[in-house]
Image (cartoon, rainbow, N blue to C red; front, side):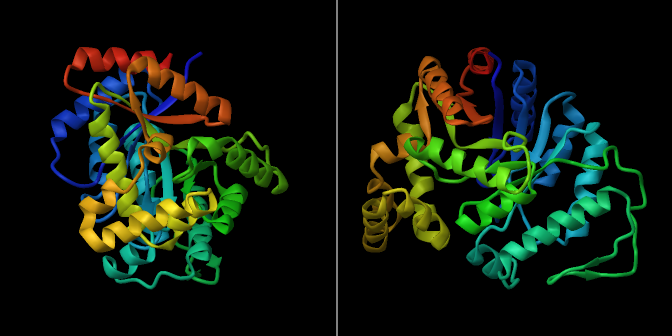
Length: 332
């Protein structure tokens, strides 16, 4: 059975644009469904997406994620309509609120009310893409001059995926989104969280299987499992200590209160190295799996059985031929 897979591109560190384009073309040739480009306080996501749109033909392209503070809803609608035109209708909109530290101390914008703002972004972007006059009266935005997008979009509706993790934000996602990008859900809790989400979608009067669910973590084919595990630990430790309350509350709800406390105490006492070392192998393996291609196929099967629709994967790029073969194996 063919799996719906995605790859992702980071927003920080060094970048080789030619290598990135080679990677996305390889993924396209292997049958990967989507390439997501993230954005935080490194490179912007839209520049690389524009390059990918020109250099590929079939693979979907999405923002994974762009926040709903640093650009207006109209600016985002312009970005996505333009990229959808450039790619021939292959864009996916990935939105999230980010967190108060990033929004207030990088972008200098007050963070609240985050859920209301996110909902209004979704409504305004959809209105603009439909080509309707921009008349909108919300709690955050009041737009009454009736501007229209001055070109015809390729599609009048682009699927919107939302990254959310608090109970209220997940419930709103179930009501308004085309896709859900959950965060920090261990494999042992994945089935029940997906079942809960599908129930919320149904309560909203929607088809419970009409919303695509992307995996909360990645599956990496590599011979250096320990290196991949350390990268996963660094991600977890940073989010538990530096990215606000939502992330530690998420893992606390799922039974990892002691680990959350231990990692935070270690980071406070010994810095990032101590915090990373305090993350147990069992937790990182339940969130970010790494191993042989055969072991990764088994993990993808377990995620699919839990209810995941779209799986995020990585393959080591040391040998391009092997990487291409591994990707094709993961696709199935």
